[in-house]
Length: 216
Image 1: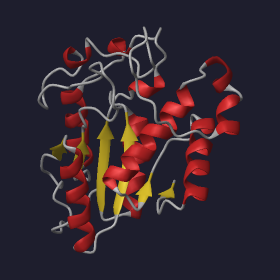
Image 2: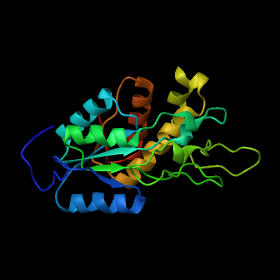
Image 3: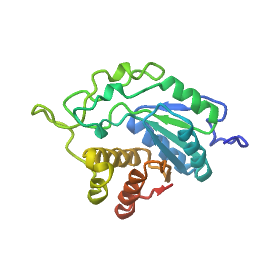
């Protein structure tokens, strides 16, 4: 990803800016666009590996600035699945993102869902995110309590293949990706095709809804 340094490439050799507030993230993106930049988003759940880094390098080919989101999406987890056990290494992730030298912002939101129970409150950036998720729960309604109730569905694509054994997974993916698109307002978004059903679902969600996001 290395190239000649420019004002847009604030991440070159520097610490990527970490943003957790939704409005601050949206404001950052709009300022970049006013300056004539295009924005690429690489959504992740953290615990980054070489596959993620290759997606980031691909993103840089399509846009002037790159945003990497790190958010363990509770909407993908059924009530019996233990969200707190999902692996997390935020400091390690930041170290890897420094090395690729083309990430301008790490978007690390606190919570993207409305629930009556605490879903996810990561501590300050740099601390162990796992500690901040010990009381995390699914977004589904449990024990008569109000859970998150507004979902994005791609009904036919979500029901077959992996959807048969994970009935809430794909609605959680579609919902959180739509939320990220709404906040970051990217021109491009890059996803791995290892989970091809997920990639197709996101492409299908975007095309009929007139979201101005190009999917790679």
